[in-house]
Length: 598
Image (tube, rainbow, N blue to C red):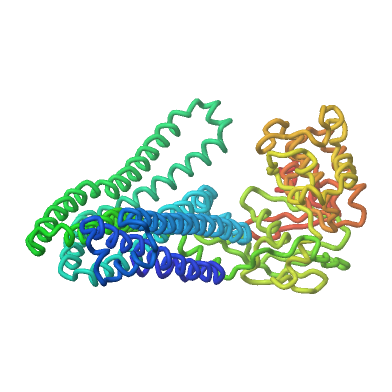
């Protein structure tokens, strides 16, 4: 456990570690304030037990004469007010320190969550394509929350209480070593025995909670994402039953951990009361029933015990929580390590000037193999796309068309071969500039739960959206009539994933998004598949007219979409098997004629 906590500390940002060290100073001062409150009660109770001390030559007698009090009772009242003032200052300082510790833990948790979210969003396409979005959501939203509330904050409390217990124990040790050592030994033995008994169970229980939480997020993501199919097939019971089981496991795991953290309090209270009885008997025997000597000692021990008993309980509860929930840290540890030192923000899109395209794009003997796949997606594929041309990519499903598109978009890099732009190899150094000039319209358009305006200018801060450019893009995508018919116009909200729009309307918003980008290279991956024939002709005519000097790359199953392309590449098993115009391919290639139903 200590090794994992040290690793978690090392993963904090330097600024976070500096703040933690500053908080250590507050923790030490809080402990001293608590000790001062305990010590202050001793002289007061000694005076309560024997007022004749004020007549002697001790420091109490000197303080009485210096105070100018009218009577011993008046001085006792002043002394009582002083003790209350010390206890008030100690309580206020402890409240402030606890507040600062809780705030620090919550802020660090939020920063870790943001750090993971930023890291995930900046990962390459293959990272997301080969993973699960529900797993990432679970780590950002749930596992980091557990790291915050069940590890970081208990660590803060554990640290504070350990310092308090140490200072208080040292104080009692100086006051009476025999009593201090006996009490500390009793409480430590009791807590260590309890902790050793449940430690292994806490570890396994925490791992079960992590697995069940991941299952819950997976079911939520899949259930809400596929709600249309679930409603149609009436399969909700399958998801709700599994979700209920996972939720019950989470609830039971969290409840068991909390119970094991709190339950020892009652056993320890029994030990504490027994210790007090033993202490009273010990003091009575040692001091032969002298109340003036017994009362201050007993008061100091009682107040110290009153402070230390909850501290011991908090230490035990914190260690139990940390041990039980270290599985949450294990789930995000590798990603926290990978995200360490990650740039806080990538440069905004406007910071990159598009890489100019004058001659054309060329894929030169490109090979690509997806991890975990038996066959290569591309095997030595070569093709050329002249600047300003209209190029079509056709082939059966799984032939490699989408992989070619991902290469052209810069979402993946070839494992062998090159992607060249005007004879310049596309690399990590110039990738951002290349992507700044590329527009992409996929078959399935993602729409945020926002307005049409914000979806067309997707990812642009609201204050920076060019409304005139959005209106132009909407018109070019044949959306102006639909927008004009809506009561809120461009401010009309589309619902989550565009649920309030038809498939064709969603597709046209995606096309408008590409027009808004004013790209020099426009890639359409089945972009008009959801449109009817008439609308497709209109949109394609607008694309042709608006694209102007732009390079247009189209992937299509419906070959009427690529009829007017300058060149069409037929792809099969990761290779270009034929190329030419629509008429040339229809005349000589039997497979193309079959695809075109000629």
